[in-house]
Image 1 (tube, rainbow, N blue to C red):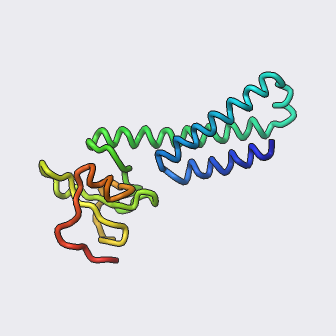
Image 2: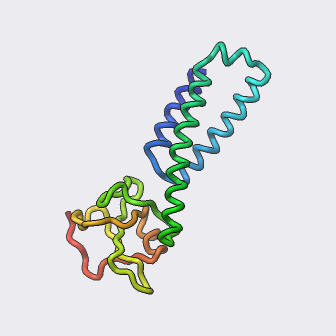
Image 3: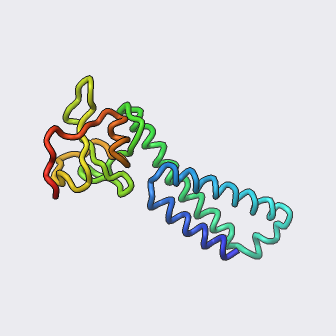
Length: 155
């Protein structure tokens, strides 16, 4: 039972520190499987919850973490729809992106062909405003962002 609590704490840390969609979905599936196995065991032996209260606490902790991350991904989906994008996430603040989404994009170039330009993490540190963040250049290009015409200075 202590092992379940330790795994739950480790997974909660992963869930809260890593806004990565596929990783989140894998963690949710793992948690659902573990929950079902344990729930099945406790339905046959309800006295075990009294004997091991840390199991109930671990479930609550994971549920809170999963709800927080689920809320985040719902927000991301709303923002993607609003901006007509399929990939990436909003920036943390006006100039920084989450670690798993280091490609910074601006929207200063809105026209029929492109949404804006994207920059690698070591370029243009002084961007006044980051519009969106991508995990890779391919994601940015799929959402109609392009590299600057001139190579930006490295920072």
